[in-house]
Image 1 (spheres, rainbow, N blue to C red):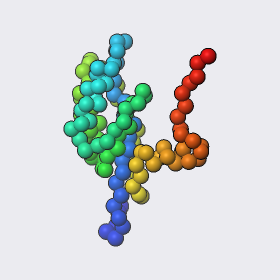
Image 2 (cartoon, rainbow, N blue to C red):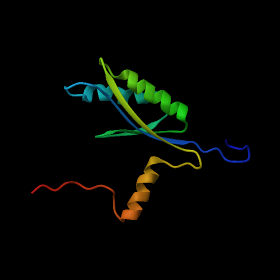
Image 3 (cartoon, rainbow, N blue to C red):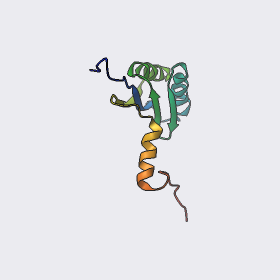
Length: 115
């Protein structure tokens, strides 16, 4: 519980993956899920394995995730959600990546080389 004399920190970061269960291309349905996030006060970045979402509070995050899930058409929809609800201080998703890059001494990205 947060005491009245303590600052209230609310940073919620999540990794979301929403997709119809199908053998066909999922990109159109995934695009619907990502577009649904636009209705909420969240920031997000889509990558090949999911979408990282950042919100100021868990209620906003969960509402956005619910809308993304409902936006996907299909007889069966699979949603995976991983939440990091940092309650002791504000920390943005970009800071987490920057911390790893500092440890590596380089960007945390590498392109495969083909021979």
